[in-house]
Image 1 (cartoon, one colour):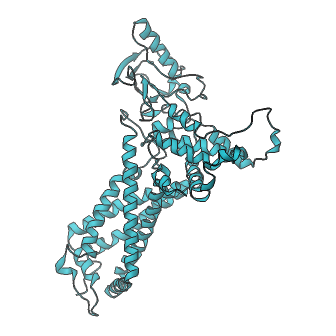
Image 2: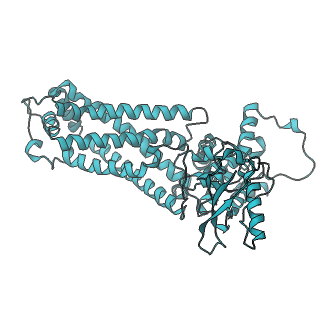
Image 3: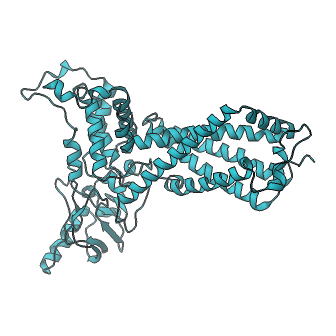
Length: 259
Length: 227
């Protein structure tokens, strides 16, 4: 199949970017979208041109590295699919495909289609963990977890942190990501000790990182390659209200208690 | 409890928006039920208006409460809208939305248009400055003749039309606002959200039909002036 690509090219974060048109002839429909970009880059390298920079790692839909907005949709038109798992058979011969990076103030473009998602790392650093002594793993059956809590925690833990929720949100809000990371620990016994401190701290960091505010469009849920429910945003809101209104004393004091 | 940090946080301001929105939503429903008394005739509506005015201080407490809710709702809305615009300085070439609704994407504009409507509506019926020749009539029992003011006002097509269109905007705003508030307050969850979304649209449709029936019935002559 022959395709045309309209790709965002940007030298570095300080430069202004623009769209460039590339011809992609003889594309095998069994290729993934990233393999198709590899083929185009081969040609660009042979022609002594700068290849298109894009993020990728596992190429099996679990690492969260790929971050392409394909024809106006983060990760492309297929539901519950990362760009690396998107196959060219979903496009038609003669299509012009627009490829853009995630667009958000919190995710500045580094080069071409690669954005800096370290804002997510800073949110995790501010509370997306449990503090436990290292050593041998404890006996699993010592901490009973209700089935529905375990299921729900696994559903939120499916988040791969790719940032498609931010890219899809009309407000560039990161609330689905933060909600998933708050919920996965709030649902489990190991997450209880730092429960209030965690949500307050992660929400504060999210606000400081220039993300927008959720206004309940639910575009994040539609774009999420792991199909994480916006029900977790409601859960994060509950967690935040609970921590702010009911148990303000423990916020920030957990560290002292541990020490 | 640290109010300052709650009110400066994204979720805190969303909660302010949701709580004030739900309060105003409740007012819209009670106000509609009162207004529908017009179908019961001049005695019913004028009697209801007189009873409301006789509440005195309680009425002013309610009015100030509503005013505070309106100010909080607009303040939180403008904060959120401003930050949301700043959060994506460079937009997409052709972003395709799949899940959101027309109502959700036009909340700020429908809200501001409803605000303009509310200002006119207060000048029209509460402060009675737009129609002085019919604003200060008394009925046979010596009460303020609200009934005649409403009926004669809506005999003017532009006024009836402006109210009709404003009710479209209000119900559009509420069709997203209801479920959005429940989501923000964490009352919704994965399984109940769709139900709340449908409920919000249904209530918005009822509110539209209830309110818009008044200018429509007056203009069509179904509700007639009493004298």
